[in-house]
Amino acid sequence: MKEAVYPPAEHADSPVRSREWLAPGWAVMATAEDGTVASYVGVVVTDGLIDGTAVKVGGIGGVATHPEHRGQGLAADCIERAIGLMMDQGAHFALLVCDTRLIPYYAERGWRRFEGTTLVTQFGVDEAFTFNEVMVRDLAAAAPTKGTIDLLGPPW
Image (cartoon, rainbow, N blue to C red; front, side, top):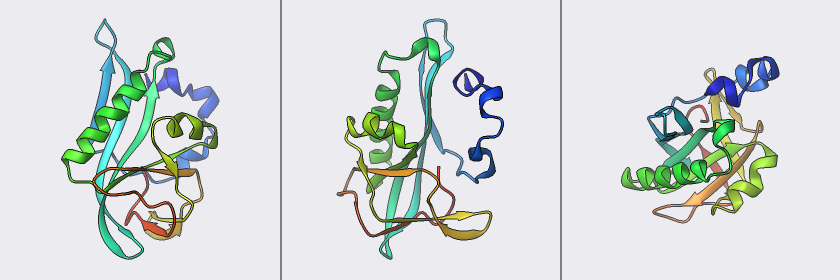
């Protein structure tokens, strides 16, 4: 599915390849009638900081739906199941990073843009995350929309 969603010829020089990403702890998938994966969402729950206060951050990443199965709500369903998993794991709020063009899609599903600073680790060096847009969603607590979120590691 990865090659169908991200054709190698189109993404060979993508800057995504030069970034360090946190591996998901879980995956939520929807399968097609033939049993193949039709949609995928990676899920993480990790320790982080909001303005220096310890929190558990849930996250989704690697959201992908095979082109033959788009428009059926599969990714949205997987995201909602991922939200439930993060809540079960005690995450305070959810976070994702995405391309600017995907902001409306996620906003329709309850995500808000994070207008503060997001700190990440890239190959052992702490830095501000400016690569993609950061969005958040309430879980056990209200998600911050300003301030500083430190992911204490790579993004996902």
